[in-house]
Length: 347
Image (tube, rainbow, N blue to C red; front, side, top):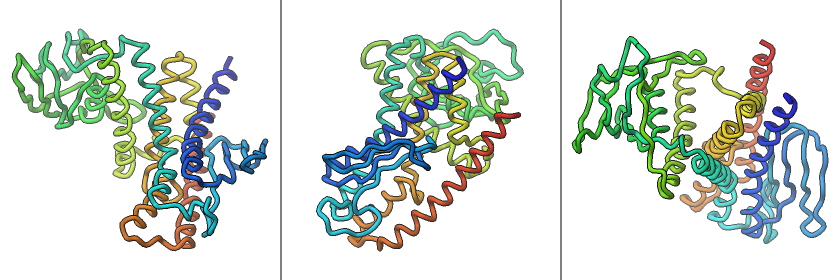
């Protein structure tokens, strides 16, 4: 049974890569760009098929840590009408962004499915009864009351229970300002204290009260899915910022091995937990690939935007050199992170 969970995790990760590359592929074909190769995975080729109609080589490689779509005129200038470099900048922008946007769309659709199927998870921001567990610090002692509709935490607007939990977890490690709607009037509570706990070596804030159920109608479901998706996207950006500022160490970063391990654990705990983690990873892939870094989609987008603004493209050799350097650094980082994940497996 353990093998089945591992296989399911690897399969799901491969599908998310496939979804990403399909976004690039479909956008390229729609813009009339000839696709040379469509690869799932990196490294040695396991199997390949060549299309007789388009001459595109479809292949699966050994290491499921990425993939790519190779297009005519991508690496060097070409005068062929179906080459990427001959297409207008706006079309190249769409092609470069399509993979990440497809991951974001798929992640949001999975969250919509989960929210639709599990009505008990659709909570709002209205405070229900407080927990009976005795704690040294309580938000009730800080002025929060049953029936309060929480509008913001530390200045960050919250719309649903999941957003509220995230903001408390992130910002509730110290006294924060909480704005609530009480008896039809907005009230600001200063220095609200939440209980704290430590998880994976990180200090986090915790909610010490129950939440009431949110709107369970058609629009309520879409509202929940929308704000859960946007919260996850924001969470990825903020986690990256936390990594740069030192709030989280490198140990908090996981590569394909760590992700597969987390997905295996989620598969053991049930289908909905597994699907939620798949949605988070899909949204994560979408956001990270839009980072303006060399070798990532965001790096390519930066060069296209530069051309659109200045009306002058960056020389192809210079762009290729920057992306190659970025790719080498990315692979080096991936090797380090993967090594760390493997070491964790044997602890």
